[in-house]
Image (tube, rainbow, N blue to C red; front, side, top):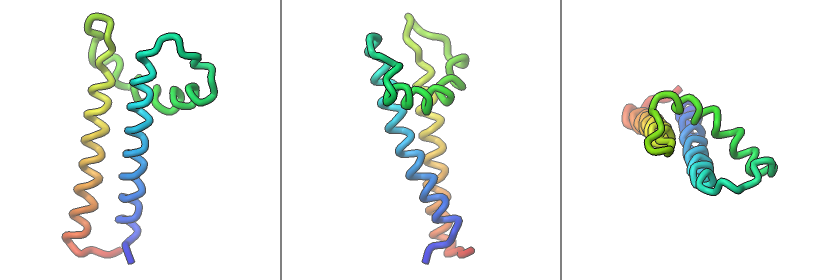
Length: 98
């Protein structure tokens, strides 16, 4: 039986993977300016991802009208996913239980 910390880290890892997919969908949808963001599905995607993306928007100025902050947001999310994955591996390697 797995320990509680490993289970929580695995849930966090899966959640981050799902969030990455939603973030990719959000970035791809931003390429279509005529979308109705009042649509409940699009509005939900925007509500889930925009607060995270907004945290990075002021850090990198737009280049030629293109918002590059999503790249930094993906890098930060990827770093977090790597740290969680390494934590899971370290827990298994140490043989720790809780």
